[in-house]
Length: 253
Image (cartoon, rainbow, N blue to C red; front, top):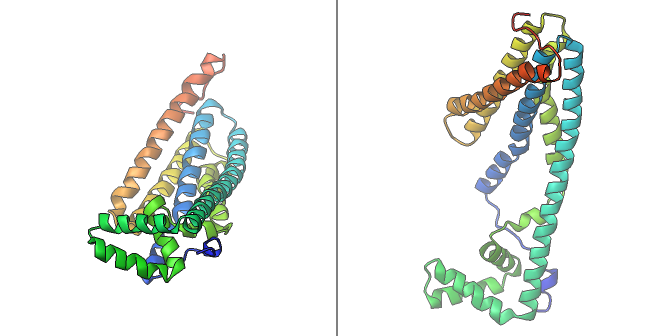
């Protein structure tokens, strides 16, 4: 039992598990796109009412896109790295306990199986067989004692960070895009809101399809939240400038 520290937990693989992992991979894409649309939509909506200079709105939107995308990517990478470190520390702790107190860990795992409805004899037999497969034994201990997936410790891909950053940038571009063109501020604001809400609906629809929920209702839900962001930002852009002696844009302009 003194070799426990060298054992790595191995999880039984199934097609269903792999499919779920692929579905979970879109979390960064959906979250990044939604956050990019909402954040930049708020900035563009507020400035679009506060100033008649659409170049200022465009520049602010692009700065929000760049800084937000970088922030989201770095945040996702650092968050995932911290999670891996926490899981590795938990695995090392469990490996140390299994090396130093094998009998106690055995009894602990038997107790977990008894809680799942197995008799004492059945639980004892299961854990005895698990002992012969150290990787699965360690996985079972990690799952039952800590409630975590030890696979997290082995994942060092930067793909989620890039997915988060790129999806945020793509989402941010939607409310900014109309300001690349010359038009009345009112027209630009309407076009920006329309593109942003369409993007939010599509993002929610996609998330709903993946989770087997009503995709249309999910899309409408996220679009509704986007409308709230637009309304609050619009009102802020209209009423805050006068507090500083500035004149906000006329709604008919």
